Length: 391
Ligand SMILES: *Cc1c(COP(=O)(O)O)cnc(C)c1O
Image 1 (cartoon, rainbow, N blue to C red):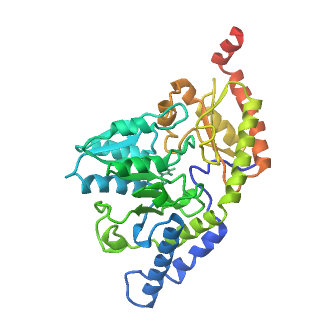
Image 2 (image 1 turned 90 degrees about the vertical axis):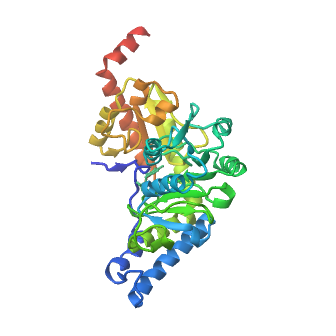
Image 3 (image 1 turned 90 degrees about the horizontal axis):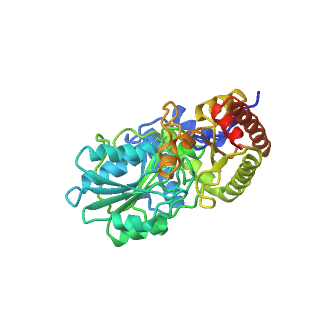
């Protein structure tokens, strides 16, 4: 049977050369970077070089890059760290209704602990309004946290403009760039961000490792307490192999950004066009232009998302009904609801996220099989029967 993986927004396979770059750090260079003998120094050097590489690609200085266990930890640290480190200045945070749960649930946790949070609305394309943002700012606002590119619908926010507003108002600005990194050129100064989260497994690196960019001078509390690692700000023996893998993955991603994007945009547009041509009552979710190169998100009316995913799985297609984190629960996506989709339409939504290993042949296979499956599911749907009768 075919095996078509189109859930690259959930995670990506680790590229072979990245695995190879990591292996010596399990077997030979296993020293603890805090140790002073040769093996320890070798590990320390590998981390330093990885940090330099990450910093260079993001336009940051090495002292501003901190390695973490992934996107969720980076988001938690950025938000809780700034909240606790600046509570003498204020208790108000601004974010959006379409954040990843790593941001959303962190903000809700802070609300239960004395902080106030404004969740900005988005328009039908998943875009925030800069006017709304300006209006939400008050004298207690200490942090703005806005996702760079949405993981479900792929919409890319005007980060540079938000950065300017934050700076003009002397408020820290964090962005969850987990989906953006590896797809969009990043320069932290040009964007005007103070904190930026990234995660290796979204750009062909290993799972369980990420980074947080923290601009020099930003006041934030440590999140994991213990040893003196990461300049006394994030304790725990470093995951050297994973850190080396993250740096290698980032380097590969940005060496090949143009061809990666060209290829993905071609496949994405072909997939969207094919779905629109072959299936009736379909709506494309997300922004028509300002969207991630590999993101396709559609709502298919009179279809139940879970049934669709199971049927796709039976023909070897791996896809998602929104975010991996919401699968297993029957709640429709908070992102699609925030964009104004009615419950029943949000329920029938499908995310196909393309990656470097997808081929044009796979796109054809998905279009053909999706059309067949939708037809079969609709033939069994009383709702669809009624629609046909009404016509
Ligand atoms: C995947 C993802 C996260 C979580 O990253 P992990 O490394 O899996 O913890 C956070 N934000 C966004 C936008 C993501 O896509």
